[in-house]
Length: 103
Length: 210
Image 1 (cartoon, chains in turn yellow, blue):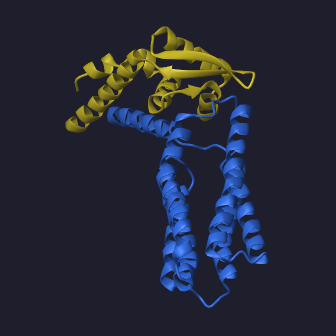
Image 2 (image 1 turned 90 degrees about the vertical axis):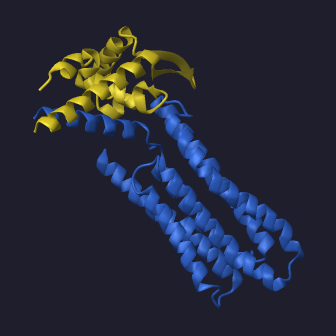
Image 3 (image 1 turned 30 degrees about the vertical axis):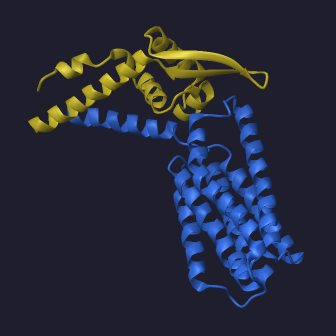
């Protein structure tokens, strides 16, 4: 089996928590901190840490605003993030197909 | 084994993407409110004998404003409580899905309201008692079904109940009942009773889930 697709997998996205965040953001234009935290059952600290990593990689952008006098933080995938996520999915599909062929 | 690992990852991604795109805000309270308003309005309609087709249309259009405004209030309240934006992408999708059948029902009713004046009593009776309430029910079912693609928990099935129930009553024709009893009874059954039952179901299953 060719190990190349596996080696090409983006390590930033490949982590379970960050993959979940990327998947959710890929499905919608924006999500708030609470929506993501509640859906993914993550702690505030865990989610913040993962988002910081994704932000530093240029995959996620953060918008801070106020709604009804309360802070509202929303997240979106950047163009780079969308591209990286699509590439990650393509590689996963390649791995699945490649292994099926060898079986 | 390798294939399983990658396939499982893809399945998790698919599930999360679906979950992120689904609307799930204040469903039970909105259904309960709509059910209560529907039942009260049906009883009041029967009690006050609102039975001329024009009065019936005006009355129910007026009644529909109450759950609509209540739904906006409940959703807004929950979004503020959760610290989420009000106009989220799932909310936008659900609204856009609901819009065509709801608009068709509203526009059709207004046109009917205008034309009812020139019709003879028998034609007005058929339109007012059969076509109008059952047309509303079928169109509302279509709206629920369309929105159900972006909503969880049986919304599409709930839409089908309206569509099939409305069509079934069409097939049965006008029963030998007083006009107000039949028309308001049908409205109360569908917009009151069914919403209330679905709201109770959602309320308890949501509680169990949490």
